[in-house]
Every structure is written in C-alpha cells, then in structure tokens.
Amino acid sequence: MNRRLQFVTVSATCLVMLGAGPALRAAGGNISGQVVNGTTGAPVANQTIQLLMPRNGMQQVATGVTDASGRFAIARSDLSTDSFYLLQAVFQDVNYHAPVKFDDRGQARVDLTVYNSTRTAPPVQIQSARIIINAVGDKAHIQEMFAVRNSSDPPQSYVNVDGTFLFHLAKPAGDPTAVVAGLMNMPLPQPVNPGKEPGDYFIQYPLKPGVTVMMVAYDSDYASSKLDFSDSVAYLINSLELLVTPPSLSVDSSLFKSSGPDSETGGQKYVAENVPPNTELAASLSGEGATGETASAASASSDTDIKTQPNLMTRLGIPLLACFLLFLLWGLGVRVAKEWPQWKAQQSASQRQKALEAEVEKLFNSLADLDELFANGKIAEKPYWKERLEFKARLVATLKKAPPALLESYAIRHTPR
Image (cartoon, rainbow, N blue to C red; front, side, top):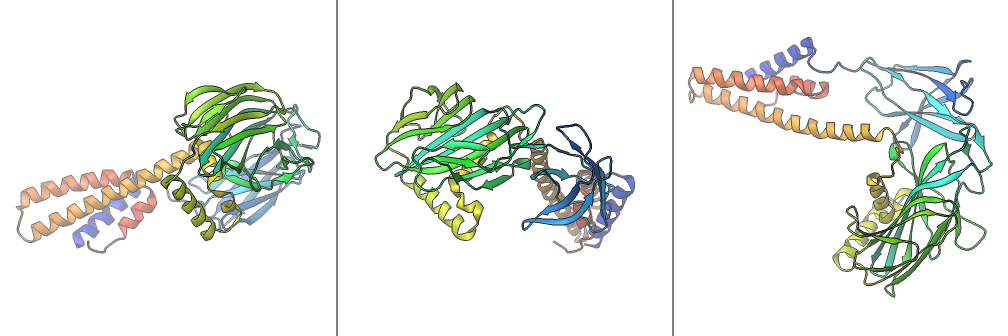
C-alpha cells in the first residue's frame, strides 16, 4: 500500500499548493466591532463586552470595554476560530447577543445594537399565533405560540418585574411551562409566574424592539373525551390558528372558522383574524383521543428523557419540545433569527461532507484493489495504468471539494484497508 500513501500525500500537497481547498484557519482570533444605541443612534462608550462560549453553560472566555466611539477589540491567542462564540453586552438590565464568525485569517467583525429600557408598556400586539391541541388518552396536550411585536418608537426594550407578557389559562392540569426563541432560535426556558387572579400568568422576559416568540405549554384533563378550551392574552392578535389532533375530533367555536387539514401536524386547522385583547379563545372539543401505540410511545419517550436529563429543559416535556420544532416550520412571516438560513446551510454542508468522505473512501479502496491485482499479475500493465489514472483524477476532483480537515486526515493516513 506504499503507492497509495505516496499518491495521497502528493495529491494533498499539490492541492494545498494550488490553493484548491480553503485556507487553514489562523491561530488565535481577533474580534472587533462597535456598540450602538438603537434608541438614540449614538455609540455606547465604556460598555463592557463579554465573549462567551455556550458549552456546559455560558462560559466567559474574555472581556473588553468600548472606547469613546463605542468601538472595542478582543485579541486572544487561545481562541479556536472554528468554535462557536457569542458576544454579550448587558445594557440597562437587558442582555444583547451576537454570534462571532471568524474569517480564514482569524478576524471577526461583530457589531452590537442595544436599546434604552423602559418600564412603560409600549405598543404591543401579536403578529401571528398558533395553538395546538393534541388529545392523547385522558390528557389534552396544549401548546401556544405567539409572535409578540414591540412597536415602540423610538425603539426601546420593555422590562417589567410585573410581567411583559400577560396571559390567562382556563384549565391547566399542573404548572404551565414556557420558553422564548432566542438567538438562532435557541429555546430559552422562562419562569411562569402566577398573576393576581386564578388562571392569570405572566412572563418577565424583556421584549426587545421587533418580534419575540413566546411559547407556553400545559396539559389539561380529557378523561371525559371533552375539552372546553378558553384561554386568552392581553393583546390584539392579527392572525390566529388553532390546530386540533387527531383530526377526527369535533370542534365547536364561534371564534374559529374551519380551514381544512393542516399538512404539518396532520390535524384540522381553524383560523381567526384581528382578535381583540383579552378575547376568550374559546372552542369545545369532543371525541376519542389518540390511544394505543401512539400514546404509549409518547409517554415512554417523555419518561426516558426526564430520567436521563433531569434539568429544566427536560421538565418542559415532550409537548413543548415538539411545539418548538413545529415553530421552526411555522410561517410567521417574520425572521426571528437571521442566522437560521446560515444554520441550515451548515447542516447541508455537513451532509455533503459525509457524502464526500464516503466517495473518497470508495476511491481509495478501488485504488488499493487495483494495485493488488497488478502486483499479483492479474491485470495487464496498460489497462492498469489507464484505470489508475482515471481513479486518481476522480480522487483529486473529489478532494478539491473537501474541507482542509478531511484533506489532512487522508494525507497522513497509512493504515491499509
């Protein structure tokens, strides 16, 4: 197999010399940028910047401070430019984040926009909302998602210890849970606080200018194969969907109008438009819920998750996690995170790399088999060299599409198949 190693090493060296593959990452990293107040348009001086690594919790890696023009620079020789980092600025009791993306030279430009905070409620409305009711056995799993828009002008972040998002749940069986879709759609668990009246709740998460997606989940009793659903929120809802599964359930509502089957959930869809604040989002459901293997599988999955990961996220339960996945497919008509397309592209790139690795391995094995046939006199010299050149050309073309890490791993390998 010496010819195999020699060919791979030479091919990899040639590719690097020709610049066919991406350049290797520089050692260490330099991050620079500016912090600007989006309320006033002015740069923010003397603002502390934290560089965080979201691994095993948010680990602080480095800090910096802005100058009089709001600019900052963080240079560290121990930064891994292939790792994921976040920049954080805590401004007027609100956390602001931005992802760090290094170029091939180890440089990253990251600008942060912060806003003045206000405790006076700004104009708030729900741009889009979706309620999913899934009847399984003697329980109705309910997930509610709200795209909450803060339309303050000038833009300000709304903070209030008495709650920034107020809602009412009619018949929860147990404590409701909630998450907020953070940067890159990362689910951020939120405490659900009881209000002054029974069934009233609030969440204290700051509402930054633009859209914040809130998600609430709870179970309700369905032992009698009937549910009188009647929740409400304290805001105008522009567009509202109610999704009911299984689709065989009967739904009676003066608010929601039937809109046919829903392709995402397999349930029935009902819609309402321009719903005033504090309107009862009422609907009566009846019929036999899902039973048998479906319910058992859901229960087993939930039990397993809670036993293996007894933390806050798993206490949210399977219904809320399913709710979050549905949200990712939900056409809100808003971009909750601009980085979502980039994340999808990274996932596609990962799949392409796996396919490239499989193709490279196949070509290496074919070359090795061909060499063995020639060494044992089972193939003539002329067809041997012809086929070998063809395999080499295909292998070089494949390696040109591969990232440096894959190129290096094959350039140093010498273990026979």
